[in-house]
Image (cartoon, rainbow, N blue to C red):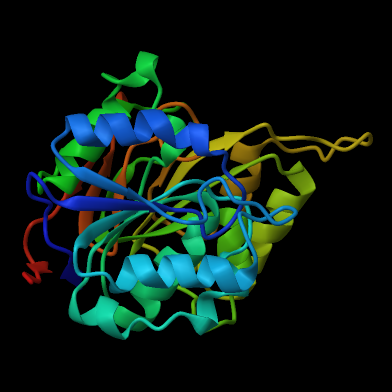
Length: 310
């Protein structure tokens, strides 16, 4: 697995919206913060533009993202927002220059399409992390933004969080893979499907009905993506809805039911996903997960990863 180079002071970070619409003003604090960290910022043409649900037409979203990937002066790309739209353009993206000169891709939600495709077809690490909406004045010192600054500069902070009562204890080691559950189910059977065998799978989601979460997890299970995990991390599952006739299980029961015949450790409510505190996760690189009675720790494993300098 190739790790993109760390950012240096004065490097340029691009901001683009390859999926849903984002108002221009939602990028202001993100830009100011990144500049305070010592970086230059280039705003893409899709920021503030709109085409119905999307930030722009498929062709223009593709062009803007392609420009960010190809431009050697842009050393990292932070996505403006998720939503929906990347799967409409993923097969038209030319990754030739990106493979030769990899750079950090940061985002989550619909950006899981890009994370999964890059890892499954190119073996390059990406960053599941905050997008423009995370940059708020009251959050400037919150861990998720401090950690994002650290990761971009080459540091690998260890994460230690309180254990959840529904956790399944144990220890795991493997590449950290995954992202948004709905997108992972959407990608199953495609060439963007991730390899979960022997790896630590991370999942999260927002605004789904309980029965649909059950169905998507069954989709992953029937596709074999839950069979041979090293460990499972469940991040934020926010704004969950139930039908008028209750489904009968909560999210914890649904997950544990789907993995009951397996013996790997399972962690719930890890602070990543569609939640205020959204820790950046380096997808594609080796990690160690330790789930104990009181705490959960997730650490990057230095061995086995090579950084490609350009």
